[in-house]
Amino acid sequence: SQTIHQWPATLVQPVGSPLSLECTVEGTSNPNLYWYRQAAGRGLQLLFYSVGIGQISSEVPQNLSASRPQDRQFILSSKKLLLSDSGFYLCAWGGALAKNIQYFGAGTRLSVL
Amino acid sequence: GQQVMQIPQYQHVQEGEDFTTYCNSSTTLSNIQWYKQRPGGHPVFLIQLVKSGEVKKQKRLTFQFGEAKKNSSLHITATQTTDVGTYFCAPFRRAGSYQLTFGKGTKLSVIP
Image 1 (cartoon, rainbow over the protein chains, first blue to last red):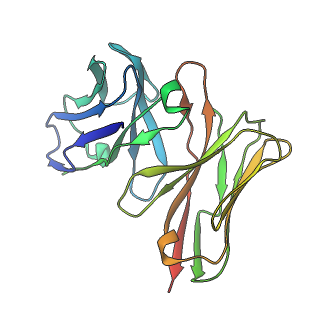
Image 2: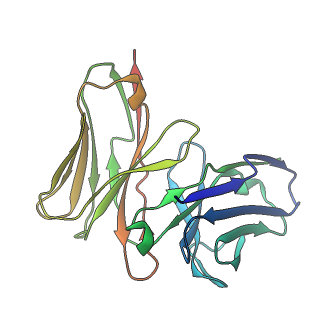
C-alpha cells in the first residue's frame, strides 16, 4: 500500500532563516506531488505541483520554492522566511495511479517568529 | 482553476440534527470531490462525483451533483460528534496535473 511521509510535524523558525520541508511517498511510482499551504482556519492553497523528477509548476509566486530530486521525494524550501510564511504545510500525492484522488501527509505546522 | 464557493462557512448544530453544505460554481464542472479535515488533521478523501444528477451515499452522508453540474452538496443525517471538522469540495482537473481547486470549506461544530 502507498504511504506518504512528511516531516517535521512542527517547526518554529525565526524570520529570515531558511526552510526545508521534506515529503516522501512509498508504494507507488511516478506520482504527481503537491505542496499546499493552509492559513489558520482557512482553505487550502496550492503552492507547487510536480508531474515528474525535476518538473515543478508554481501556482502562486512567493518566497518559497520546490524541488523534486527523486521520483518520490518533494522538497519545499525558502532562503529567508517571512512572518507571512507561517501556516500548515501539506504534501499530497495523486495522479492517474491514485484514480484522481489526492492523499495527504500529516502536515507541518510552521510558525515564523 | 475552476473556482467554487462553499456555504455556509461555519455551521454549529446540536448533536442529532442534520447538516448540509453547498458547493457552487459559475461554470460547468466535469467532476467534484469532497474531503474532510478533522481539527488538527489533514484532508481525507470522501467521494468523487462525475455524472449529472449523481447521488451517492456513505452511511449518514449523502452527496449530490447537480443536474447542470454547477453545484454539489453534502448532507449529514443525525450528526454525531465524530462528524466535527471542515468539509471541502474540490473540482478536479485532469489535464496532466490532476489538480484540485479546493473551496474554502465549511467548518462543522457539533454540540453534544
